[in-house]
Length: 410
Image (tube, rainbow, N blue to C red; front, side, top):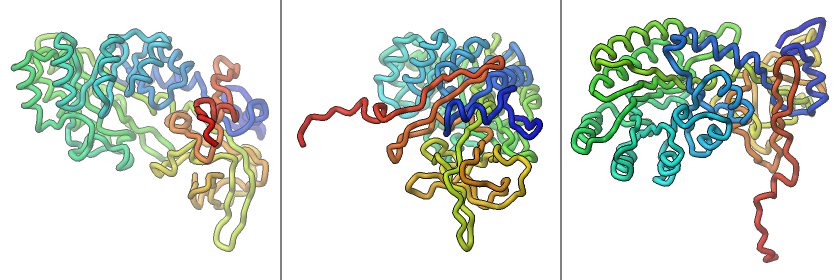
């Protein structure tokens, strides 16, 4: 988003005009930003030597999925529903890796029927796959016992995490492979989102590649993701070129030990779509109390839950008053709960009716939304080659009750 002559623009389109056309709240995505990030990440991590499997839980609008498919990406799906969305968007089964957590046998059955790659993260699932589908190759998700991630709720590779099979249980996995001829074609890990230090990630990669040496039939290694992005001007971000060089070295060593070429996969999500997204909302009221000034907006954590769930920080811009004086305020939502987007945040002086923009809202924004307080979910708009396209309409009252079955008891 850029400021020109007192007006804000996204990919050449005026933000105020977009708000007037689609109403607020509304999610706006930049296709150009997504495409640029995709090529940047792929180039830094190894170019054609690594395949990017878009972690679609970040943003699953089918139009966005089609965009990634057109770029040559694969898909990381954590549910059979995401898998079905991916297949519907044109991804081939071999370009989808199904990485569930604590699902039932029927989900593995559906994944096998679809023919996608399957990633198992617990011993019972591995036993089920081997017993039911002995000739179907699987990937094993390990837990490397590495504490990494930007918040305790998104750190998923530590010893107390539900995700992956502990590295201390690898002997059980290997015994199962040897005793039952399990077909394990891949090894995977994912230690967390928004990893704060590259060293944490590199150490986890060291564990992953060292463990991979014991799996003699491997054809690919999936390193997960968790790459850190900058939310503030002075924020750090992952050194992707450093990670890419490390991967090149480790891959070469593993190929030498196993005597074959190894495919490398990674599962970026947030880093590909976060900066492409802008969440627009309007100021309902400005409430000045003896201790605080509250800027109340026409949205809530039902639309953007990250600040309340993860203490996430999003830059907030008052588009209606770009040159105004600054004041410290609490930006709060309309949900009947504590619903705070920002506390004691310095933004340009706000008034009723002003248009605010949350930056870095492309990942885990709409996808984590809900109808709490019976509120409608907002529309989604994609800007592509200088034009704006509605890719999801705003919900209406009929959407709240379309799945209700009234037995006419009262």
